[in-house]
Amino acid sequence: MAKYIFVTGGVTSSLGKGIIAASLAKLLQSRGLKVTIQKFDPYINVDPGTLNPYEHGECYVTEDGAETDLDLGHYERFLNIHTSQANNVTTGRIYQTVINKEREGAYLGKTVQVIPHITDEIKRRMLLIGQTGEYDIVITEIGGTIGDIESLPFIEAVRQLQWEMEDEDFLVVHLTLIPYLKAAKELKTKPTQHSVKLMSENGVHPDIIVCRTERALNTDLRKKIALFCNVKTEAVIEAMDASSIYEVPLKMLQEGLDTIVLKKLHINGYSAPQLSKWKEFLDKLKNPTARINIGLIGKYIELQDAYKSILEAFVHAGALNECKVQIVNVHSEFITADNVSEKLANLDGLLVAPGFGIRGVEGKIVAVKYARENKLPFFGICLGMQMAAIEFARNVLGLKDAHSTEMDLHTSNPVIDLMEAQKKVTAKGGTMRLGSYPCDIKEGTLAHEIYGAVQIQERHRHRWEFNNAYLQRYEDAGMIASGKNPDTGLVEIIELKDHPFFVGVQYHPELKSTVENPQPIFTAFVKAAREFTERKNMAVNPLLQSEMI
Image (cartoon, rainbow, N blue to C red; front, side):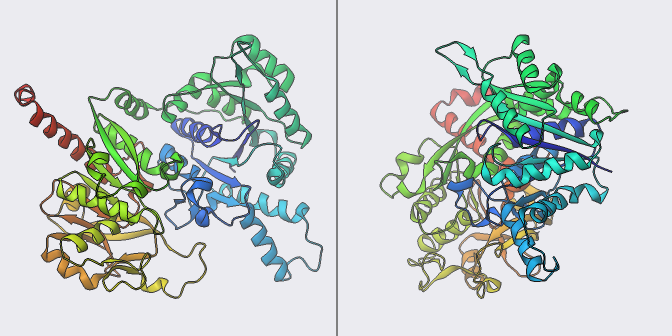
């Protein structure tokens, strides 16, 4: 039977519950335990698929096609495992399930209430993954902050489970904030005390308190927190700000978080942590031998989490190439033919990001043209790939009004068109082409060189696709469809013949990049960008060439 760890948050949001949960899971996994993580979100949306990225960051897609919270990306990147629909549950999904059962008469005419019906469904889903027999430990992150009205049913479900289960099978980790007051020159524990008090009033008491802080906690402060929050001093864990999220597991190892968890769960006979690959990755990350500037062309650049998986994929690829990848955010809405050279002149590579809607589209097309004509390494993802196809049609094939029917329903040259299976879809939530699909790769292409395989599996999230009625004209002009879906003929990868690196993909490769397995296209793109900057530097200073030789 699996053991259960619940991670809650107090004082404020955005403290990093997902990173703490993933770090603890990584430490336990490194000791030989089978671990998974799930996220319970308090919002009423059934899933984040219909949310604007400004609202909640990126929508992360799993292998089985679930649109989930971005924290599941952290779980996969840290643990190098796949999550699924069952790993992310929202209030909306809970209520939808209960209401559907009520409509079917499943409650035999009883009044349906938050307790016990909603909390019973929450508990059922909390225990679901652990009942498969695949895992030793299931970590559950509870979204929101203690005291939020919308989180109360989840906290009540945790209280009931705490009462129902044996002490050695159940553990609560509470993440809180210890603010530093510059005027007083001291750390303050009162917010943490109030957070734990409020949590205890709801019937749940933490076993471990993890304290986010800008300054180190001294022994007296730890003892004070332990005394007033009724935990052992060893159960007060310091979580100081780190330069990278990937340092957090090692910081938690130093604090003994995994050790106290194993002790409280009565888990014996475990091995020492095996983190050599993780430390090797961090060493490369901290000691790069080169630096490159990659332009991220998007329209949600004001919010870093909107492109979270892309940014992390660059971290992984950069470390593998021993190269610091500096992301330069460029808002596509403000790119024009007149200023594109100025905005992109100092870049070593260009990534046109995914997205939806017409806003910023023309700027992306202008950026693609610049990359194509100036031999700047280019990588387009989903909508970015479609923009590359439109730019090529307009400026190489001479189809001046070429467009996507997403933006121009009446274009006479719909080089990007709505997928046939999508034409009768009216509901927006969970109805796109989602999840993992196969892609056959043409031998002798750049894509084949990158992947080293003739068939791959990648994750998708889109409604529009490349219009194959135009494919022959593209290939005659030098743009190759180097990857296609074997069942539908859907163009998955496009690339240019006479360009050092020009690749567009319909899928989302960033979703499968992990610390242990960096995504191949990101790795190749970073390598191409590094070579581009080296060539550029040699052109400016020919002496560098002799030094390199």
